[in-house]
Amino acid sequence: MARIDDYQAARELALQRLSSRPLSDILKTTGFERLGGHQFRVSFLDRTYLVDFPDLTFKDQQDPAKEVPIQEQVLILHYMLPEPIPAPSGKWIAYREIPGAAFYFSAFVKRAIEPLKKVFGQNTAGLVKASTALDGKKVASGDAAFEFAILPNVPLQVILWAGDDEFPAEANILFDQTIGDILSPEDAAWLAGMLVYRLISISYR
Picture 1 (cartoon, helix red, strand yellow):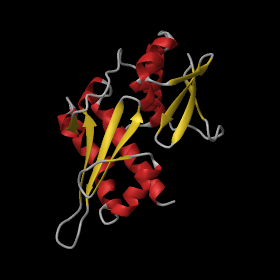
Picture 2 (cartoon, one colour; picture 1 turned 180 degrees about the vertical axis):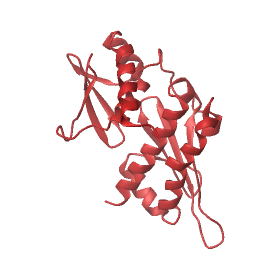
Picture 3 (spheres, one colour; picture 1 turned 45 degrees about the vertical axis):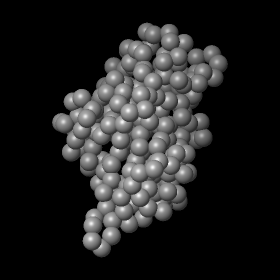
Picture 4 (tube, one colour; picture 1 turned 30 degrees about the vertical axis):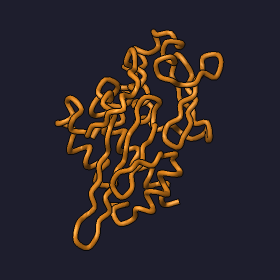
């Protein structure tokens, strides 16, 4: 598991690459909203962050005193790096199909698939409630399935097959085929885990 200093180092590396690029170019390819001056807005899960350029400092719009998790900062900064960022293809793939994902597959299962099955495997209504609150779009698959636009060009689908007395619950998370051109396999695993844990958090409210 990455340590905080690893994330801090990753943030600095991304900052070095991004700060030398024109903000207009970054916003054009990322789809983020410019607010005026050198600030832009990032919607991420159920939070909205205000980001200042070129130092790329993050502030939670709903709660300015709340610290923005560095893991989320790094993931958003990594999303901003590709030139250009491809639009979604509409073709869905499993995590294993992402180039280079085999090494991180066990981490992906631990961070995302297992918690999804554990919490919602016998509680599809909880997944429906949480997904609706997170602006998920219902998908015709499994016993409960939703598509999420977590970042402008990075959609994910969460699919759950409920368990019963005879069969255990099953779950899957699908990515657009372009994910490997935008995020590393490790980042894709983190993103899926962030989504699942946010759904879990919302279901308990």
